[in-house]
Image 1 (cartoon, rainbow, N blue to C red):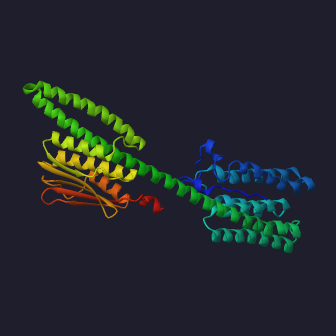
Image 2 (cartoon, helix red, strand yellow):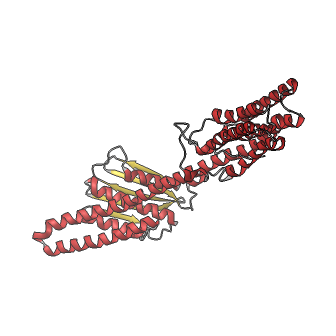
Image 3 (cartoon, one colour):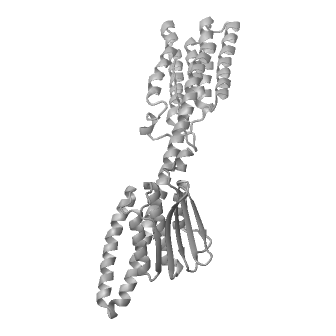
Length: 393
């Protein structure tokens, strides 16, 4: 007898009589097209009237009962928010009504028991439901045998009381498996969602670092060219050409950022930072080890940190001096960006917060000191990191 996965996870809320879209009814991950297959077991309901050559009136009643069953049966699959009490209870009631004169009505008890485990949320509820179905079938069968009403023998009693419990017990296992599969699907969807969110955040941080720095340089050079256009047209033209070059370079960097790569190394980033600061009129002291060998991930994070730190100096610090220091010490790499400007506010902006997230992801630390200007110190381990977000999964 049937394994009937009803697909409880697809049930919605609202009116119990609202239909699902027709193109989704048989695409459910749990049952698919199986409702059309198992409904053929309804044929056992017509064995008794065929063998006993019943009257037209009995045939009419049996066909009417079968039609009601079909509405109740397919309603569990086709309605968005079916009522378990109405549908399972209705099928069970058909069995109670028709069993006195049609022994094939035990089919309704079997259908009800087969569906119960898929219409509840736990094993305990399924067991309780099966006991109710089996108990009703047993009680009616015993009453009919005692009163002598109808033709209820031992086999009919077996199929109305015990066999539905056997079928339902087997389906309880499959229902529990379906519930576990639903939980796995939800967990998988949640993991996919979190991965998408993390990727959006990564791209947002990268674009902020790339474009924030570049647009600051473009603004700075454009303002300088505007001031020089009357006094020194040749110098102004040079600045405009550099703006064009930086714009083209920014386009390439954005493409690289989207692909997750970086075109420049840390040394090139330090050189570019020094040039940017000098263009802004900031005196630069750069003390960086040129022989320092860094893993790719650390180098990328430090490059972005230099870019973001220098951008903040140019935009906000109003500094006259800036010191960049990169050194290796006790198995770690230490980057220091210090200026003598006005310092930052206590709250972190998007750039600094993204910088801290990258550093901490690689097992490093970021410290900020706002006294006498701003000093940012980043310390990263030189060994290949095990990214925290992966290890915590």
